[in-house]
Length: 305
Image (cartoon, rainbow, N blue to C red):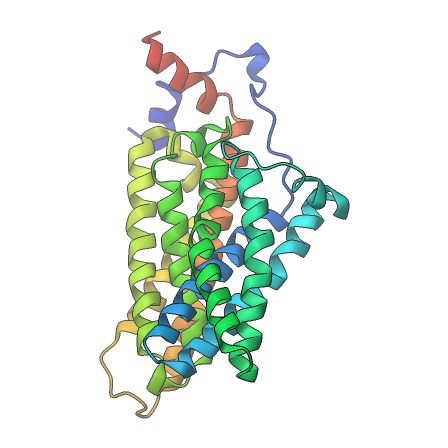
């Protein structure tokens, strides 16, 4: 029995004229890229602070620069989606702990200055105590910054996001770790990049495993991950992540011939794969909201009708 046939039977729609039950999300294409840059910023801050504590100064500097790039790119992307810059400031008028969007806005507003101070202190060598305090704050707040977007998606009524509420934050955490490790490995000399390569490798493997687990647990509701644009993004993401992880994990002599080229290629593939995975998740939500099978079918299954 084909996959299409299996989808029709348990998820037969009963909506007016087969029209969508839910409106598609109104988020613009900047949003999945913001998910990726926010993950880069948060996980890179944690990597940089850890490298500082371990005395890996070369790696720490590159990771701080990666965090700064991520946190600098994130507000313009978010503001572009909101349409009017002052809407971002309006989101800071209140703090609502039960709202992932409110928490995320405050996290971004707090992590940005902390990363800037820590990076400036690292580059100039001035005010080391202030830099270390800012670095600790950036690392502490960077971890929830890297994962809150998963909770934000799961907090919606979009079927493929809401039903994956247990896995999405962990998928985003693994993706952020892979991206931060790959970005640091890409910019750090090979002699100092071993911890970054290990983080990128571990994050890539975890992202692949968790994404697969999420799709399996969704069952037929996860069909958008295998169809149309979401399916294409998902397949490309898995190929890029797997190939990049193999390149970063290949046994070779450090600083030997070709080592740098293989590291750069592997890191670039991991970063691309993680970005594509965010896009796959984003597009899968649109596709599941547009098709009443994914809204009506699970509700009927829960009620036994």
